[in-house]
Image (cartoon, rainbow, N blue to C red):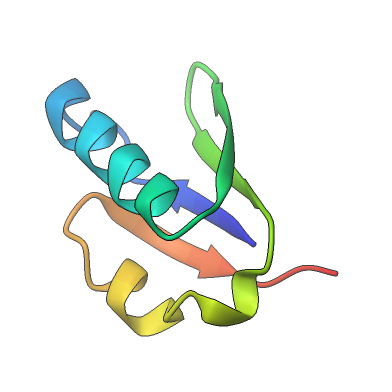
Length: 66
């Protein structure tokens, strides 16, 4: 699963989202570019509710990958 964050998301909110995802048992690969920031989730993402993650105000979109 990939989580694409909105531009200029506050660092404190980003860290809170990372911790939230880790509490679900996922590992997070974080990549911050000049225009796009992504979080790659590694683990059993079938347990992650995509709608809950997408509802976070700093999240632009969520995409499942395999």
